[in-house]
Length: 292
Image (tube, rainbow, N blue to C red; front, side):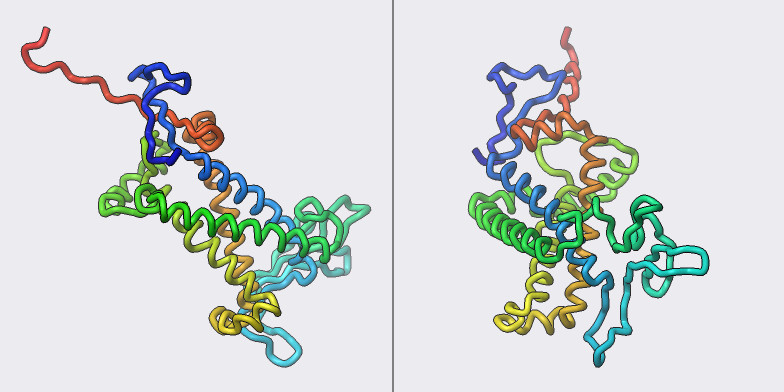
């Protein structure tokens, strides 16, 4: 069943009381399936990606000059001082002590020099080969699922009907932002303006950008599609964009979870698990003139 089929009854077929709002079928089965495939894939991509990053914990902008890079924008590591070893993070030349979190982590008597700690990587030990296998597998799963979703959504009209912004969405944007700041959430039949922009930004900007920069870092893809390297300013710049895109997707995920909790987790989770979603109740009808 497509997400456009909006049933206005309870899940057991009984009419829905107006005071509770309608229970509609909002998320089609294929939408829910791809959502969870993306969630699982991104989880493994994040943790295996941090494992790969640990093999060379620095990011650069621009191409390599000679045998050295002198244009790093991020570096995570550890160094010995007069008193003790510390973990540090350099961001655009500004160094911050991140001992216990980044660069140097673990119990004091067993601290290990790793950019990201073992609990944040797959596998937990230093194993670049396994991390690459896991990363590439879920990268292809994510890419294939996104392609299938895009084709299906274009064919059945889901993109045009539910995600494409309309003129009124732009007019309602300031009002939607104000409502979200005040934690006022409306449970409507369709996505609100901020949802359309957020989902559209992830599905049509961040995920394709992450896939393309990932392909750019592959030597075999460099040979097959050499223009990608020039498009992103070199493999090291592509790696930096890839990392930054990952950070933005993680930020989206955190905000997404917070919005689910604030808007009502039971209703939101029921929608993405079963497809059924309860809308806000309709306002009571005002009595007309002359009525008893």
